[in-house]
Length: 309
Image 1 (cartoon, rainbow, N blue to C red):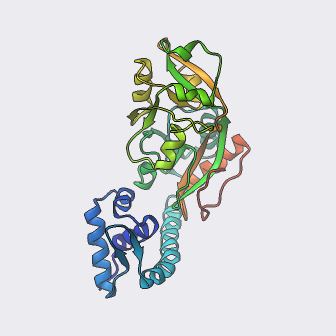
Image 2: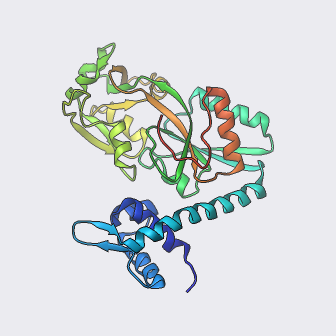
Image 3: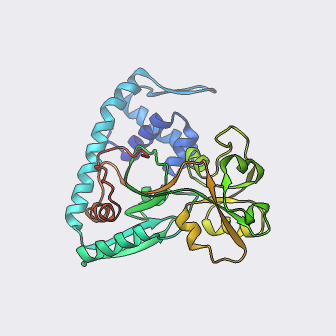
């Protein structure tokens, strides 16, 4: 009756989501697989941990007690493994940095700064899709990633945060807004916003393509995309408009088919470095320090929770 880590992970995610479908998405398995893992764990323990009806999922009293004891033990186990991995690798080897959109000046300077400090460590730059901002890190395809805020993921560390700038609307040169010097956020009610599809959480997708203006006017929804290039191609075809951070807009400003118009009245866009919680590799931690040195932002402790600032 030994322990199975996958069963414990399934229970922890289900306890957070209280929804089998969402738990499956977070674990990259089917809903039925989450149910199988839970039943196996309950069989090992000898009693139900979760009550499920057609309307809700809730922890039993035993489930609540089990969660209270399991969470810190699981975090400590992950931290021990991460510390051993970091000690084994040191700051040598390869650091894989994920990014969305474009590599802006802050990120470029941080990569150069890291390379000067740790010449023994190679750096790979990996573009990650807009539709899955957190998946590549969770699947260990990258060691850290620079993503658009907001970030509200319990298992990830956020920091430093940088490149806070007003948002820019990308439109086709044929769009009525193309000749404007700027727009108010309320005027977004007059155009279709291209959204983000895929595995991105709802709160993150709403931040990139809000459904309402700050004043409460509905914003028409355009098609959903998985990558920045897909979105810009639809913009060029006048299928919708797309909100971008200013650094990405500046990078693509030379495209003849697109126009970029600043938007007043929306929260500034911002980028942030995310790493694993409760620990991250020595290389990722060292890169966070290098990035903080170029932006003036502090570095969140690796045992903290990721929250947008």
